[in-house]
Length: 264
Image (cartoon, rainbow, N blue to C red):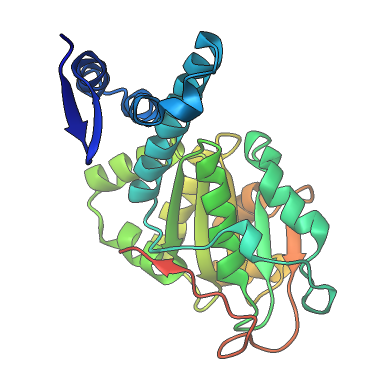
């Protein structure tokens, strides 16, 4: 006689439980969950073909793998809150166009190593848009690192030569680098030199999104005048790089403000 056992208060056959346990043991959590669902609901799935039931298991596993990959990328991104593109709506008054949202949804700019500057006055959603772009990129499997620009400058300035070299190599491998709120202060000479090294290493290797209250053509002014300024401008603020200008009054404290879900 075939015995049975309960999984989450639902009775299934012993051999079915063994299949579920085996799937979990092989780290096939998506397949295991799909099998549990099918075994626990024979009235729904009993009439389906083997091919349909197998297809459901494989799709479940694919979704699980994608979700796990996203979570791993998110944990490494340094982003502390989740904002999604579908939380943002086109708003001509604020300069947020359908084309802008489509650009971030399609993510081809990352494959083409195009840099993007999102500028506008304080509180109009520059950071929210950059974070939503980052979340979308990670959903597509791209690696992301996020820094506030003041934090980024302090980090690269404090590192020893060896530590900085390792940090630069790490950023070289990152698909999308986000530098939030650039332009608050002029970089010191030492920071500008290291900043240029990072930008040079990432040239045609990754994309960068910058948010700032300054326009793209004015961002070079935060770098001390000299050869370094020209080198950074030539790699980070090229003619084919994209500028998105948000406008209007501050969203903070208003209905338009998107705070996101804090995760860290």
